Length: 372
Ligand code: IPM
Ligand code: MG
Image 1: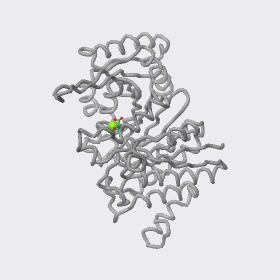
Image 2: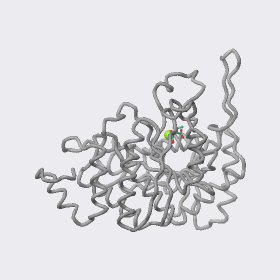
Image 3: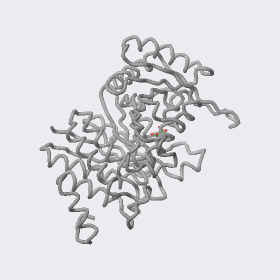
Image 4: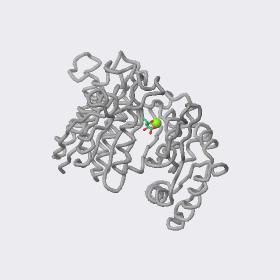
């Protein structure tokens, strides 16, 4: 398969983790006879520095002309600490999502057996957790009218949803549930918010088309608690933009590190793949950030194009790296520092030689390997 992939490394650790994902995709292309063509473009704080805009027109055009987008991370402390900044890096990502119509953000959350002890939650509570979060991505409070009064003393953000916006992601979430354990939980705040009541009404209506899927509802405050108390109860979670943002960061604790969580943002015409973590500016350029979220986002990209065997090879490689503790410091490997690049090298090597990996790993400990 021939794919043109736009690469938007962005800020902070974005470039270094995306580098590893590209390396892994190149290994897949070589092993499985595909042709992946990568073109990079600036977005976020780096784009503001270069052009004055967080999403330059050329970057948006490149994305629209590509088959898929591989996204790194966005954000810079110099904007976080300045509430009066008129131009912010995050506006680049939000505009990109809106312009490309990426309304469904899919965030898989899984407890890896080998990492159960890395989570602050008890092993027996998280073992076998496997959740797919469907977060609405182009509506709600993120995109409603924003007002700041002239005297600067009053602000408001409108949260609005249309029936159509709810319907299109709901169909995707129900279909996903059908292919999984056939349970869908709508997370909302229907006891308080009018938008949430509309979500309940529309989702209940749609559920009639999916009689094999069990639908239940949870208020978001309760869902936040249940995520910690008993995450295994969830299969597919469907929720609006802001609740999905919060609950997915919370859910990342189950996996042991936010550095593991990948995501796909899809619409009717385009698809973007990005780690859910942020730009982690403290780690920028240090080669310590976990590249696995970005690498697993690349696997989701392959899934999106039906390249399941290829995507599985990446996931297998990742599991192997976790098993052998070839991991960055966020997963506190028992070995000396294993860098971002080395984790990427290991995964790349596994893709080429899945059966030799143990040998390579032993060599590593004998100090003979050129891989690590
Ligand atoms: C995410 C991020 C973004 C969001 C930020 C960077 C705008 O937190 O993708 O979860 O809030 O959607
Ligand atoms: Mg977030």
